[in-house]
Image (tube, rainbow, N blue to C red; front, side):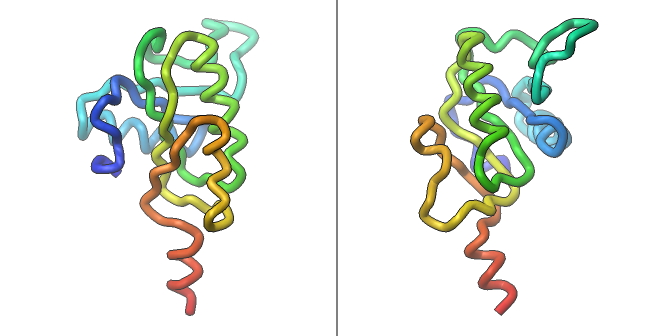
Length: 125
């Protein structure tokens, strides 16, 4: 997954829950700091949506395990953008979206994946 990370990336943002271990490994391989992004801010403790650093003014690449509709990525991107981050890419292990649909393009987010639904469907043949 390391080669999929855009060169201008300043932080990785692992989405709860599957993206967190992936972003942790990518962080150790790239020395980029990582944020752990919750589905929603906790109502106690730090009350933060993202833990691990300040994303304001930084380019954050989201990290997810599986994308189907892109809903969780869309919500995380919107929340981080509201905090002042720039989010234009997500790196994922498997993109299960319908081939050619590009579910996040209308949100200004490019998906970079290791595997796609088309590749997996072809592997079953």
